[in-house]
Length: 281
Length: 351
Image (cartoon, rainbow over all chains, first blue to last red; front, side, top):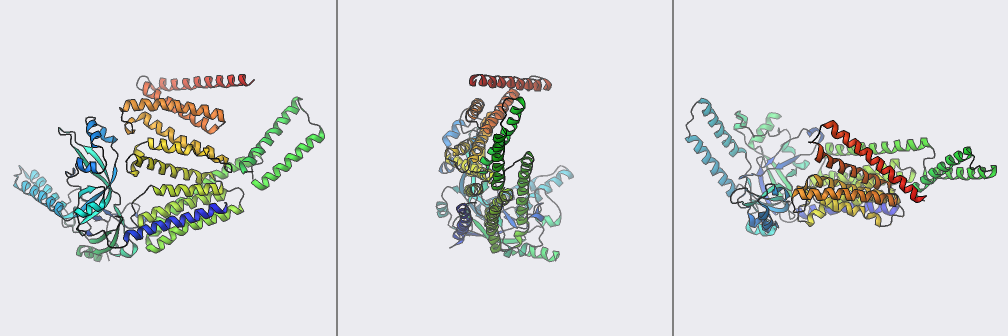
């Protein structure tokens, strides 16, 4: 190889790694943009079938996608993000026009254990009250009713308390509206426009995915997670005491930096987690 | 002189010797003793010289072995790259962050230095190609894993960096495999960037095949820059670029919904079907004029693909399967007769 190509390639490797690490340092320097103390409800520790082949440990950031349609993510928000609402409304009668709508990058405000979670609790408790007022026709129906109520209770105990409450193109403007850095995190996300084929033919937005949703846990912070079994999926109501009485086993301090990229600062076991680790030992 | 030029000269010498034997047997041309010995000696010296300096394939056996060595080198590169990939994922998580960063940085650096060292010792570049490919894989792993460790937001700039690295390896060592890897990464970067020009988030660049048409065109035009020291790369850029264009056109010819155009899907599909036929025919014609056999083959392949997909649209539901495939076969035979006629008329014109 000509020496100059070799030299350029070597310099490229060093330079790019340097820029990347400087970016990381820049993100983590100064005061954190946001600091949230989340639990296992919001940060899942799940293993994969390839766990033996991957020694890395990461936590999946879960946010509560309730309600499925975000009423606040309206046409005005989409316009602010650069979507052409006029074009969407002109073609809205075409049944598959939504396939032509490309996503955009945006910043989403995630609220932790705030008004959105409070409203969710009220709604679910109202559902429970309504179900309790029903009179089941027979034993089977009574079991079904009990099962439904149990599912909602389980949901309230285990579901993420992180909700998306706003979206915009400029994170600094969003932070001015949500200044509490211990309850609101601003994260980058991919969003799309959609529409309802109802009489109103309403245009709305949806958050397709957070751009960084898996958080790496450095080796120095992994100790509390050693020995914990991966959390099973709670998609189906399970009457076993272990599931019915489930409590989060750890809390995680997550910080977001100046580039809105997160990192794990601390992992602490809760009493439930300490109990499980004790059993394992 | 490059190795490819030397190999072409060797092939011409062998062709000359074979033809001379035929001419002598037919009594058309017989060199006298001195002339024959002079030519033989001159060619033998040349072959020996080229074998020593360029390690070209002097005999048919050499050529077959060379092909085998290229395939083995490629498979070896894939296997070692996969081994490094899985090794890192298996053990890297058990190390501190600082150590992870150091190892990820050192791996491509050391592999690159070893590649450079081996290249100075080896004329044929089989081991160099293997090591260069592994160095490329290590660099890809370096940035990917750092991105995972530090939860960095994904960016299309990674494709640009990997693409540049691949090209540096390709041009520095005159290797095709890193060139293809580099072109693939650059294709991703260009397509993603074209996508962002249309307001789309870069990760979704694959939702619009036109992004790849633009990217493919940019790559296909690279040979307009002189490639005096690597003339063999020009063909690679053209074929790779047009391969991306043809695949994109083929997709849009069958699924117009994912086009940037705001017409009805049916009209978009018609447009791209016509474009497919026109472009593939033009590429065949251009390839014949410029003696670019790769482009002729590419154009012919996709012309037939476009034709077969169109015939499928028209006839698949209209007739029994055996009849459908019989008709396809007869069309292929018809095409062969037509192409033979073109070839014969071309010879008449030259005569």
